[in-house]
Every structure is written in structure tokens, then in C-alpha cells.
Amino acid sequence: MYLDKLEERMLRGDYGSAIARAMEVIVKVGDVLRADRLIDIDTVHVAGVSYLTIGDPGLEYLEDLASAGARFRVLTTVNPVGIDVLDKWGINNYFIDKQWRIIEALRKMGASLWLTCAPYEYLRIRPRTYHAWAESNAVAYINAVYDAWTEKLPGPFVVLSALVGKVPRYGLYTLDGRIPTRIVRLNQDKAITDPLIAGLIGRKIAEAVGNEKPYLMAKIQGNAVLKQLLASYATYSPHAFMIIDSLTPNYREYAKMMDKHEIIDIDLSEVMKGHEGKGQDFDAVFLGCPHYGFDEVTSVINYVSSKGWKRASKPVYIAVTLFTLKQLDPNVVMKLRDSNIYLVTSTCPVVSPFLKSLNVSKVATESVKQMYYLPKMVGVNYISCNGIECLDLVFND
Ligand code: F3S
Image 1 (cartoon, rainbow, N blue to C red):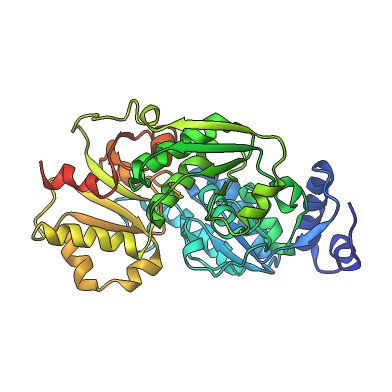
Image 2 (cartoon, rainbow, N blue to C red):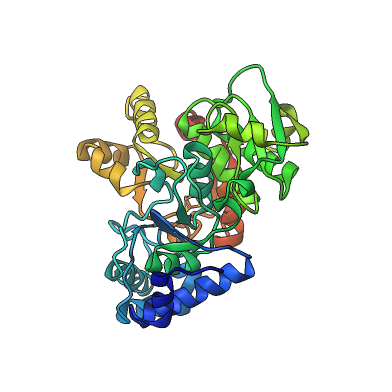
């Protein structure tokens, strides 16, 4: 792989041992992937930073890097961690202390501690810019919605990319690597407006195309619905990449570049199978995977207000970004609490012990991504429900 003079100096150690170590790994990976050169990235989004998933080895690795003087060279945002930085939610102090050490190490290296899996809602990302992101839903989102270029990269690798501000040029970092190879059509009369159905469609697309790259022809209404489709698709897809007709910038160019391609038709009635009415037996409702933004929380507020702010029969936990919480009137947040609805920030049930700490062993959720990970990662079961209608389960029972 070709290295320019600056990159060679980085590799040689002229910029310190942390940069040299990072460069060494990046060059080795680039060689394995047959990258032709390195490219400069605008942003990095780090994932895999919960103490639950990386434990002491991950914590020590990050602390070692930070104390060796490693500093991020580009804007580096961070995924949800294992704790809510504003509330304990019954999590023990040992876990909380370890998690704070991880956060502090990242802070020391210069990370922007947004602690959200939806950083794309707060960044102005230009089409055809390069990024190194490790959170799959976010990778799918910026590729499909902004035509911003990133591979789905492993968490430790993007930390190194943040230190040097570069990634190897291969795969989705090249126009050829982004040419869709399957047209996927949804047979639909109306636009998809249901988050649960969108998530199930995302999973179906991933199963139908496997390693191929879809060009999706479908009508999808609203950002919340799009987030569910892409998060679910990215969970099941090896690369988390799709182009969406009439939505992805430059979609016409992508369509023209497709050569011979198979067409896959997806039948909506098939998609819903196995998700109709799974009963009322659950401990809490969970919403906010990916993290809810201001508009999604506003829909919840409007719903509860329409119910006269009565109290939900079971708790509702909603994962939101710290930015969303800041935007909300604290009195409204208190009113939600009085209605048994709790905004949880900076974390996610899949990488946190908070549901277990609250004695929740089964949730009602709209998120197909949560359905995939909750039983595996934290031993929590689920029933499925649909977007804002999930609240009917605890307000109309
Ligand atoms: Fe975010 Fe966790 Fe879902 S990181 S996308 S809330 S599984």
C-alpha cells in the first residue's frame, strides 16, 4: 500500500509511539484488504465502549493509549456506554466506576462524549466524504441518507483510525465498491409508516440479499421509520450498506452504474409473520433503539398528554440522547416520570445491566435490533409492539 511522506513519518514514530502503533495496525489491515492507499477521514464514531462488553482488557487498553499521550486527530464521537451518566438505575458502584474510567480515557484522548448511537442527527455530513464509524445503524444511516462513505468497522480499529485520522481505501470507500448488486422492491400500495414493520422489512432485506448490496425501491415515511428500517437491516447485514431510490443523494448515478442485476420482490404479508399479537406478558416498555431524538420524544409527550397524563400501568423506558434531554422542559420530564415514563440517557439496554437492575426480564419493544440482541447480551426477553402504539399496552389495558 502506498504511503505518503507524512504517513511514513507517522509509521516511523516521528509523532510518538501511540501514533506509530496505530499506524502499524492500519497499514497491516490495509495490506490484507488490498487497499491502494490511505484516505483522510472527517469523523470517527467509536462503538464497543461499555464495560459490560469490553471488560477490564478493553478498559486497560484505552487507559494505556490515553496515558501514552494518544490524542484523536479528527472529530470523534462515542456510542452509548453501560451506564446513564445522569442516573444510577440500580446499577452497582463497581460497574459504574469501571465505566467512568472508560469514559475518562476517551475524554483524555479528545473524544466528544455524545454517548449516542444516533450521532448522525447532530452532524452536518456532506455527501462523498469519508468517515470511520463502528455503530452499524449509524453506518447504514450515513451511507443511505447522506451518501457519506464508511465501512462497518470494528470498535478497536476506529479508535486507531481516530488517532491517525485515516483509513485504508477499500470496499465502500471506493465508487466501484458501492455499486448496488440487487434491486429490492417492496410490493406496497401505501408508504411504510409503522416502525415495527419497517424493522421487519430491514431484516427481510438483509436475509434476502446476503452479502449483496441492495438498491431499495420503497416508499418510507418519516425519519423514525427510516431509522428502524436501517438499524434492523444493519443488524443482519455484513456491510450495513444500501442505496434507497429517490432518497440517497446521487441515487440516479448508482442506478446507472448497476450492470446485470437480479430483482428481489418482498411481500409485506410475509414480513409480518410471527409478529402478530404475542400477548401482554411483559414487565416494561422499551423505546429508543436507535436513540430517540426530539421529534420521537415529542410524539410520546403528545400521546401521554392526550391521555390526560395518567399513569402507565407498567414502566416505560426511553433511551434518548443527552441533547434531546437538554432540549426538553425539565417540568415535562418530571411529568413523564409521574406518568411512569423514564428518559434514560447515554446508554442502551443491550450494553447495560440497567434493565436487570430494575428487575425487568421481558420488554415490549418496537425495535427489531433489540429483539436480536436483548436475549443474547443481557438475557432479557421481548414481545413486539408497534411504535407509539406500544404505549397502548400500558395506557389502554
Ligand atoms: Fe443504539 Fe443500542 Fe439500539 S446502541 S442502535 S440503542 S442496540
